[in-house]
Amino acid sequence: MCGRYVSTRSPEDLTDLFGVTRRDADPVVPPSWNVAPTDPVWAVLERADRESGVLERQLRPLRWGLVPSWSKAPTGGARMINARVETVEEKPAYRRAFAKRRCLLPADGFYEWQPVAATDGAKAYKQPYFIRPEDGGVMAMAGLYEFWRDPAVADADDPAAWWATCTVITTEATDAAGRVHPRMPLALAPADFDTWLDPAHQDPHALRALLATPSGGRLDVRAVSTAVNNVRNNGPELLVDA
Image (cartoon, rainbow, N blue to C red; front, side, top):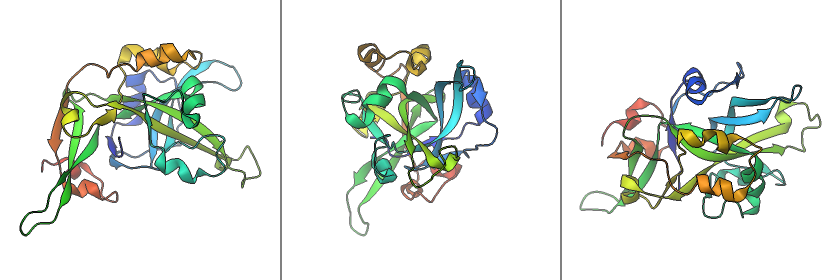
C-alpha cells in the first residue's frame, strides 16, 4: 500500500511539469514531507469548463481518501487511500471514478516500513524507507477522484457542500521497492498522461492497458528517520539517512 508520501513541488513547478492550463490562485497546499491520509494534496485532472465546455487541465487540491458519491457519510474516506490496480475497475467504490474521473497525484517519493525485531535493551520498531525515482524526478502516481455532496449543507453552491477526494492506485512492487513492501504506487509515464486524464476515454480495457506495468526507471530506496512514523512530524529533516 501507499500510506504516506512526500510532495514538495510548488504549484508553479507542477503547472509547468504537467502542462496545466488552469490553476486557482486561492487554494494552497503547503509542501509536505509526511503526507498522510485525509491531508489536502495536489492533483492534476481534466474537466470541462462549466460555461465554455472547453476541456481544461487543472491543478487543484483534493482530500486524500476517496469518498464515493453514493456514500451516506464521509467517514470511510480515510480507509480508501489506495485502490488495487487488479480490481479497480470492478469495485463499486472506484468503478465510476475509473471510467470518468482519473487524475495524477505528483509525489517526490513515498514511504514504506519494515518491522525490526526487539533486541536486548531495545524495543521492536518499524523502520521507514523513502522510495523515490533515482533521477530525482516527480512521480506521477495514477489516481482517481470523486465528489461527495454533504447533505448537511443546504446550499449546493456553497463550497462547503462538496468534498473532493482522491485515492492512489497501487500495484505489485518492482525494482528495489519490492524488497521493502509487496505493493507500491503505480506511476504513469509522461507519454500516457493525456490518455489517462482525458475523461472521454472510458474503455476499461484500454485504460487497464495503461496500468499494466509501472513506468520505466529505477528506484532509490534508503532508510530514513523514524520521526516519519509520527504524522505530526514534518520537514526535510525526515529524509535524513537513518
